[in-house]
Image (cartoon, rainbow, N blue to C red):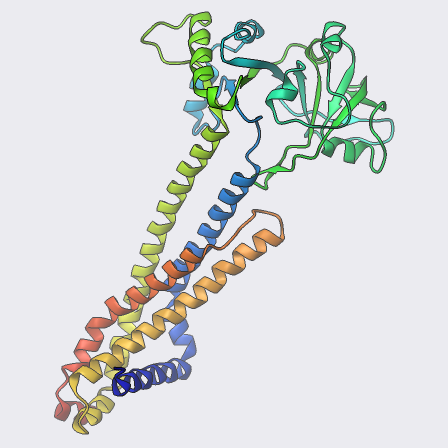
Length: 416
């Protein structure tokens, strides 16, 4: 059965705690500031991480299904020393890419060249910023990089053989240079050299809501060499015969590259192989690091906030010593005094937690509305934040509550 007497007592304690908070709202807010910061940090960071994770799940299609990449550098390089270590590796070459053709589980090999920096692309009347990736590619690029033709055509083997100055452009480039018009057959200029637009790609959106995938221009690599010179390096995109053949294709590619690059049996690979799954695993690892750092900061903030709650509750016990003595003289048991102050510290911590959740959710909402990051607040982060705040309130409220319950009624009523 429901113990209505106990429930009424708890509701009375909550009412008294709320009245105490209303009596000194500024002091209460400053007391719970650490808890506010901790919970706001957890909610905001988890919202950003969760939003990026969901965005990755929905948009991670840099490569065609069953495809993977081979590059000189890893996906993420941390530190100047690490960058120089990878930069000292031998470049991947066209010949090495050609050596992969004909492997049992390899269907397409896209050999891609790119310069040191993005380029500006122009027409007679319009121009993009210096942010367009100009690539020298083969026709296999279409089948390894999840590119779909929206209008016109992709580059052909004849374009490569004859070094034709034709280009296949991303939707973002077409939007800037030919707003509201058909770009196919029009002329664009790269470093002042004219190219005819052979086709336009379907819109591909962004990577994680941050970097556009529509700002590129692909040209035959023979024309690329003639206009832009030999690229800094070459990257490869490989597509397996079937999605389930990817592990075998990767093994064949790694073995072939180790052989043609002259690596010994005990030497590490001097190239990187990664796929969409690799990118997802990398993001999950980064998310775990961010989560651990966030929870560490949250724990520190809750510790500071909990100490603040304990201090203010000790001050409250001192200020209300006479009140406590009167209540005990009128028959209030020590357990009721203990419960009253525990509930008060719990309410104070939960109010701080609720404010923190609101602030963290607000940060996530602003980030999403401004298209900075596709933030989404997961329910578990809200529950975790409020639960942590409640735990801090209870743990740090035990000592002041116990101290209040141990007061001698006679001595307490004499207090000034």
